[in-house]
Amino acid sequence: MENKRLAWLQAHIGKSTKNSPSPFAHWLDGVLEQAELGEVAVRFAVRPDMTNPFGMLHGGVISGMLDDVIGTAVASLNKEQAFVSLNLVVDFINAAKVSDEVVAKATVIRNGRTVVYVQAELLHHSDKILAKATSNLVAVPNKIK
Image (cartoon, rainbow, N blue to C red; front, side):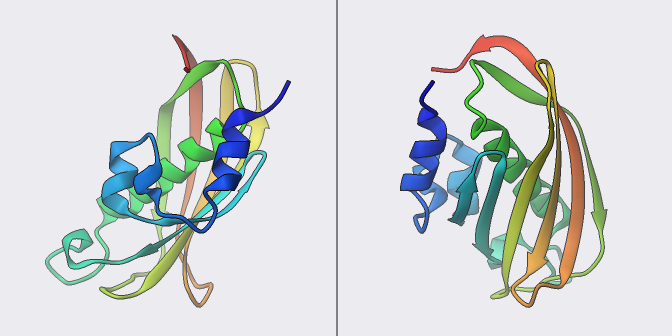
């Protein structure tokens, strides 16, 4: 079976996530850097509207970046049914500030029929780890169009 979702992702490497089906990805406005089966990477520029009162990348935005790239990695698997997060566990390790570039990478570790387990990390452009995340996603009855 042809993997249309992965082909679509690969055709969008180097392009803005404003083309994504995810409205949240439009706001994040990243650039897709990698798309393989079960592996995705997206680069983001830290903007002022992404920061906390201390001028650092907000923890909620970090979590959102990781969650979005995790969902995209699961989408690359081309499953018929939709998957939604059961949990998202994020460890915050280092900080980023306005004008920094960060890269969110996600890898599917277990591709189950009803539960998919994914690990992700957010890296500073210097490859310093900013955050790590894990997530379990569960199949829901909705079919993806």
